[in-house]
Amino acid sequence: MNPLQNAVLATLAFFDQQNYPLTVQEIQQWLIRREQIDLPTEPPTLSTLEDLLHQLPQVSTWRGFYFLHKSESVQARAEELVAERLRRYDIAERKWQILLPKVKTISVLPFVRAVFVVNTLAWSHARADSDVDLCIITEPGHIWTARQLVTGWAALKRDRPSPTREANTLCLSLYLTADQLGFQPVMVNAEDVHLGIWLAQFHPVYDPHNLHRKLWQANPWMQQLLPYAQPVVPEYRRKVGTSDTRRFVQRALEVVQPAAVDRTFKRLQMRIMPTHLQQLANTPGVVISDSMLKFHDKDPRKRLYLEWTNHLNELTA
Image: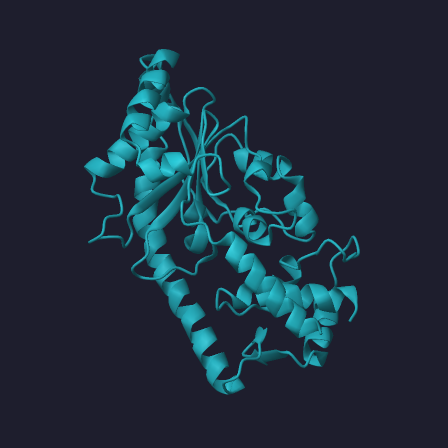
C-alpha cells in the first residue's frame, strides 16, 4: 500500500468514528500524514484522489460522499450516513442563528479578545439536543476575570448546560490567553490526530486581532499531521464584527478591572471548583493555569486513538 492510499484510509477511518462521510474535496483537505508516511508537498489532485478511491476495495461512495464498508449493506449504510449528515447540517444552521447574538454580547465583555466555535458545530454536524462549545481567547493576565464575567453572564441568561437542559446552551470549558496558544502540552501522544483535527476546525466567529492565524502558527505539529489543511475562513453570516463604540465600551469596562481583581476571581473560582477537576489538573484533559483553563474531564482521545489505529491496521493488512 502506497503512502497516499494509507493517508486516505487513515482519514476515512478517523471520520468513520464520527459517522461522517466525506466528499473528495474534504478528503484532500484532511489527509492525515502519519509518522512513518511521507506525503508530497503539494496535495494530490481531485481526479487522482477519485481514481484512488474507486480502486480501494474498503471504500464505498454514494451521491458524492465516500465512506468505509461495514457489515451491513452498502446502500443502507450510505443512505443512513448521508441523510444524517445533511440533517445535522440543517440543525447546525439553526444553531448558528441562535448563537451569533450571544457571541456579540460576549465580545464586549472585558478582556475577551476572540471567540471560536469548536467541536461539532464548527463543522456543521450538531445534534438538536447538543450544547455549543466555545473557546474564549483572553487578554494575558486577565483569564480568570474574563471567565468570571463570561460564565456569570451565561448563568444569568440561563445559557449554561444543566441536567435538564442542554440544547443550544453554551459550553464554556476552554479559555486561553492570547500569548499562549500552543496545545502541545495537552497532546496525549506525538500523533494526537483527534486533537489536531479538532483544533484545525476551530471557527473564528469573533477575531478582530487575527488570533486564529496566531493559533495556527503556535501549533506547527498540527500542520505536520495535516499537511493540506487550511484555517477556517468564516463566512460573513457566521462572523461577529466590532466597532469603535463597542471597543470603547469594552475598554471602559476594563479600566475598572485591575490585575488584583484577576487574582481575587482566581481564588473565588478555585474555592468553588469541583474537587474532581482540581484532582485532574494538569492532565491532557484538564488544565488549570493562568494561561489555559481547560475542563474536559471526560477526555476520550486515548480510547479513540487506540480504536482508530486498530481499525486502520485492519484496513491496511
